[in-house]
Length: 104
Figure 1 (spheres, rainbow, N blue to C red):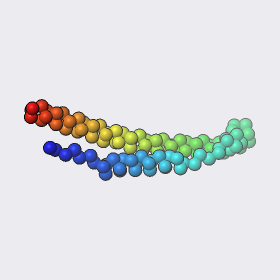
Figure 2: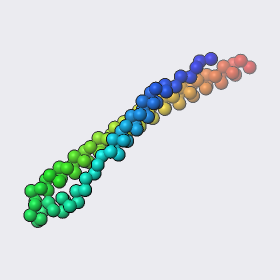
Figure 3: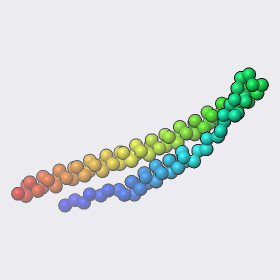
């Protein structure tokens, strides 16, 4: 009888990639930009600083989006690995049932 081989190292790598991406996303520090935004808002006399605040927010959003893409990629890879494992289990199960039927 054929042995079902599940690539545990691939699953472990995927799990580690997910944990790493999640940790990176969690470690992003969201600065308290509220005071700066209010101070630099048009009409505050510090209008020139508004662009810097806007750029800081844009950079934070960009970093968050990048981490989210990494997490989605890791989840997708994990799902594909699991689908392949499920298909292999199903294929081998059907083959075993067929051999059992043929033997009776």
